Length: 287
Ligand SMILES: C[S@@+](CC[C@H](N)C(=O)[O-])C[C@H]1O[C@@H](n2cnc3c(N)ncnc32)[C@H](O)[C@@H]1O
Image 1 (spheres, rainbow, N blue to C red):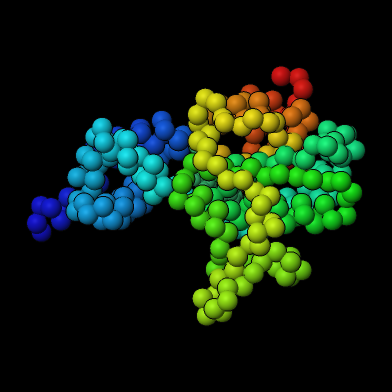
Image 2: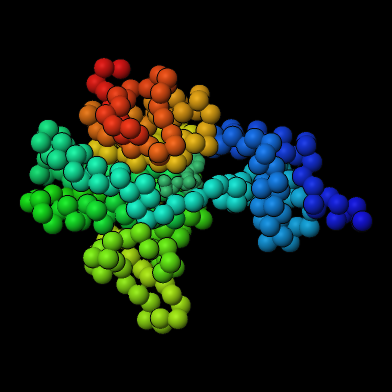
């Protein structure tokens, strides 16, 4: 086999360790050795799109001054895992409507003049914030003067671009209840395309923004009442969990709620949250 071909197939141990270090430092994601094949495949594909033949050359470009300036963002796009769904872990949305929103309203944390502020952190391609927009719109229809806004953030510009468009393959919307499909989704004119789009009246509630949870400060001007940080912590180590959660708590009102993914926990972490239900926490006023 030619040397160039051999190089293109194998990500060397040296390149893998410098990638591990860069990814961990830049966005907190742990890339354990079992991820090597996945990284290799994704970066090879990215390299091919740039007309770069071998993964060695791709790494050399990435770690160059120019690569750090122009390619880092695309490398992050290529390696992040963006799996998501409409109504993912749907009990969260039932609890939101049946317990959390009535509690917030009763406690008068939320006032008539101030919209409820919800943050979908690590929003991926938008299914989570649009699910929130549907559920909150339904709630608003029965709750006088209730207003809300949703901030949806992610580190990956690629998923944010898709999310902003709000266009999905029809098979992605299976989990959306029928009445909400009728109200909030539009079929493409050309039915053969099999696409749907979130209606503009719903899209307007969601503001998308690039935000790296690992940064020291977040560009968020007003405190949130509810944060969905689901299936994001899973990619970070314990120390990073504490850093992110302590930082994130500064952007949440006291008694504000935090939802995490069903496979995640805050057990044993030194963070200012009290558990109120499995995977649902309130910001504590003590710490
Ligand atoms: C598996 S998706 C979860 C999507 C959605 N929250 C859900 O539960 O369906 C994880 C998202 O976290 C984002 N992410 C990973 N590291 C991040 C970081 N340091 N800052 C912000 N977002 C990050 C990824 O780009 C990805 O879109």
